[in-house]
Amino acid sequence: MEKTKNDLLLSETEKDLLLEVLISQNYVKELVSCEITDIECGVKKTEEARIKKLNDLFDRIVDAGL
Amino acid sequence: MEKTKNDLLLSETEKDLLLEVLISQNYVKELVSCEITDIECGVKKTEEARIKKLNDLFDRIVDAGL
Image (tube, rainbow over all chains, first blue to last red; front, side, top):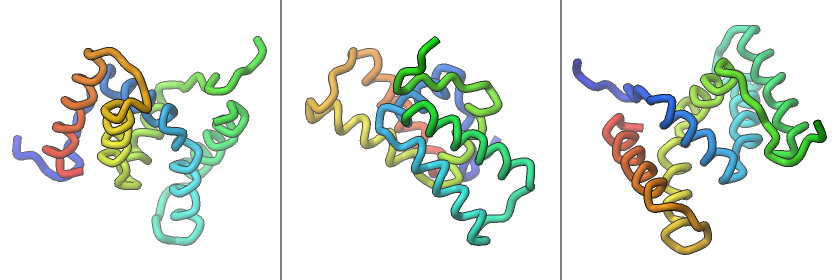
């Protein structure tokens, strides 16, 4: 299977490692905020359901003090 | 249970959403690279096994063109 850009199949261990690094680098809030801003400014298109999930996740991240 | 900083319990859906955003924002390579640099410069301490996992993951991310 020819590899294409973004063809990154992550194992559960790698997923957990990436999320741990995301939090350890204190970047999780900014990352989600950037995605929400891209969508709100029209840079990216996405479904309503995804925007809602992103906003809910952002609120949880803020609540957790990250 | 009193919440402490970083007390963010993510569902599988939220984990996948965060990883999708990480890739969508083109930040996955830089993120892992920052963590590796922090460790190599002594800013962070970690076990050998974790550094190896981070380096292996970084190589896979580069291979995937991310």
